[in-house]
Image (cartoon, rainbow, N blue to C red; front, side):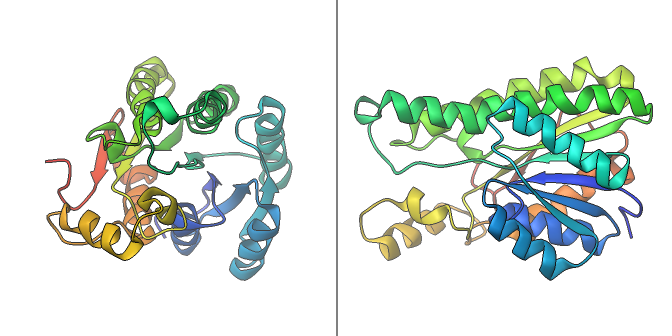
Length: 250
């Protein structure tokens, strides 16, 4: 029970990598807030997992909703130990010149602004509690090894690396640790969009061929890494971008 008595928030926790992290954290003794814009799905997952999970609806790009997420967590559990900022959206491959300003703004709001808002909301809580805390940001190998046709998505993920590292330095004296996970594309609902409108089976096969270990990331891969970085075993680790990519970024 490596997270016994810990209270964790996981954004985007109702599906994909987020759901895998939620399930692992509960298995390891945590109580988890499944924070998701899809409240029906979040409530379904919470019901499936039992009394150690609750669902809270949140649009992570809106300050008032992020603030309410923190408030609801404290109302239910009295403290917060871990914030996993996993919520994100992807895009279909397209040239930058064909990418709309509306999509640009949406991607940066949900993938980047949300991480700023979450950190801005949780850090005062961690400091008030006086026992440190953990922020874990789901980034992507797109920040390390960009793919053509995803320039704006790559850029949103690239922005999170200096944000995560700089914040780790900024809050270290409060014993708050800030780390990032950099997964390769995973077998999750977002994959279909990344593969585009061409032959999906062929695109899937081609993508896997670029990963030395011969497969894409699974929710369990992210969950195991998140468990370590959010546990007390990683008490001396901050500012790390952990690649979970089967060797793709080498």
